[in-house]
Amino acid sequence: MQVHSQETQRRSGFTLLEMLIVLAIILVIAAMVVPNLLGRQKKANIEATKASIAGLENALKMFSVDHQGEYPHGGDDIMLTLIEPDENPRTGRLTEALLDRLPLDAWGELLHYEYPNQKAQNMTKPAIWSSGPDKNDDNGSGDDINNWDEYQMQI
Image (tube, rainbow, N blue to C red; front, top):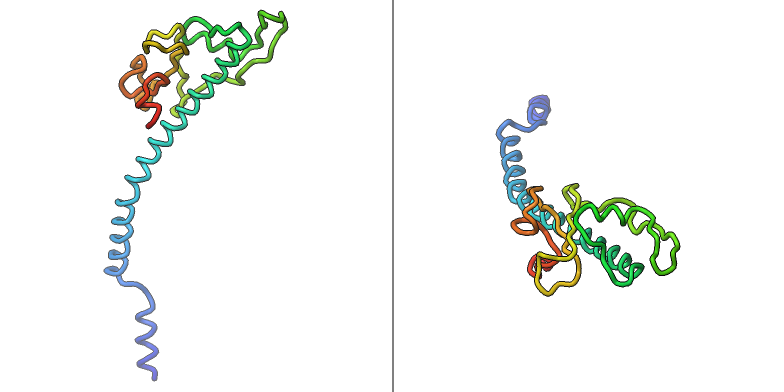
């Protein structure tokens, strides 16, 4: 009886080989899962940026309603008018700011704005774009995410 209890005590832990096999299995599973998660993060950032662009478009539509159908003319600096109270030209009354803060893309960069739109033909709305994952402004092309490229807005 005593021999049996000593054998049980000696075999109570894992061997080094068993630990290495378990570690190898975990690494193989991680190698299969991690690339899928990284791809999903990129797609989620693109979708979040598209939502920011759509939100800015809606704020600009509200601005145009208050300003006889006109969008603000100019470039990126025009977006400051959306975060400040503005005077309605029809009523002469001060209206609330349309946005609480300047819109950012998923990478924490400011969105870009241009009106009149020189980026897309036959587009009456303003051009809005993000510098994209590389954070370099390619003027709406390259990896930039914009509101005039039909293919990009469907990704």
